[in-house]
Length: 253
Length: 335
Image 1: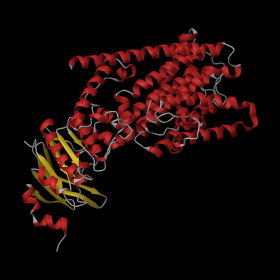
Image 2: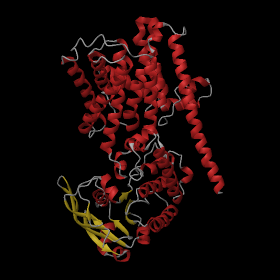
Image 3: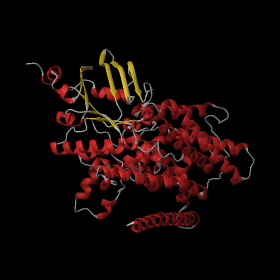
Image 4: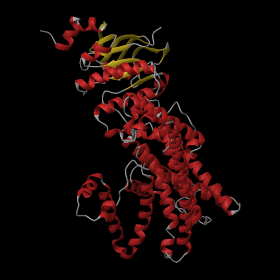
């Protein structure tokens, strides 16, 4: 059975139909790509999946359970985590705190324990520190644990955002243009990292990307959006040789 | 290797333990100092009478800092919560006939709880707003509370309440200041504190990692209101009289000035700024005519020195003496 099942998804902003009739089925463990020209509605699809926007039509089911109408924080708890196209880190918090904030729903010591700094507080914090450092190590960020997030390099900030998303223990990870602004060297490193986190964290990944090399290199299946509707769907080879896709990206002769 | 790790762990535990001892010693020494100041000949009567107000301002500033500095929402109605606490406590002690300390203790807790309850009730609908909109609504809330107190009979109307037992002394204030600082510090360094700081930094990202933004906003608002209520209880039992006009929006602004001057999100800064800004108007009494003018000028200078741009310039300049460089050197975001 599919992990994520999206049927006939659509949303209106006033008179504008930003996303229309999108169907998407992602199997567990898949690495799925979502591509399309600028303004095609890719990020809007992410916002619909994570509850930032409420869809005007269609259904979204994660593990056969509908998540339409749930708030972002509830959807996070059902197992979808994401990163953002324009990085949204907690800049004036340390790298470690950024990750620990994402453990919020896993280590639930009470308000009283917090106010009194009781035993459950210290054991919880200690466990969180350990887990957070382990996670940061995977991305080679553990050396920056006490640095403010805003002081990290651009590439490191992207990685930290992925680490923070993984800290919520998701089944499905949504990556919004993870390679944006990276040079070829960094991009190829990122491809390795994405493969690595899929193996290590047993997480299914849906990613938006413009870098065709990255998409065709790691994705098993691709959905192409144009003007909010599906243009093509299939394996990277099928999709990237599809004349309609080429037209949408490069224009007509 | 493992041994090294366990040694490190022990070291860390020891460090925490030492920290606790230092804190306890600090608190005791602080109390001795305060009682020396209050009873000895070091201070004139005029300045001795400032000990309680300074403590009240510390409690108000530290609690407002939770909302403004850590949660990142501008609240202009802190005096409203303070007045709820002040009137609750005063009405309690006026109508009860219990032994002094017990009566006062119950009054303080009650003041905090009622103010906190109001903070929560108002927080539920209001905290869905953000930024300027929220600030204006909290301002309006403070004014509504004041005009209600002004028109109710049981609060004494515009004349207010008098003959309130004068229970507030330096011991009560000291204990409550320490409690406020400790509890606030513990709160902001816990997972709750991390949650509200992440809301301040980016509420959309906070929501997507599973933090219920409105819930934590209301909680912080209620906790800040609780402490404001406690400060109100101390205030009403200090001079023995209460008037609604004590709690107009000037009071809220005054507390906000302390928080901004001390540094958003810096508890230590709030404490220092509260003491400074309580003493300053009194210290300027010698030049009575220019008092408010000088107060404003000093405030402007202090704010300028706090601004990050100017700070960077000052620190780069090698000709300036060191004490100027260190002035106001409170790290934003630090605790």
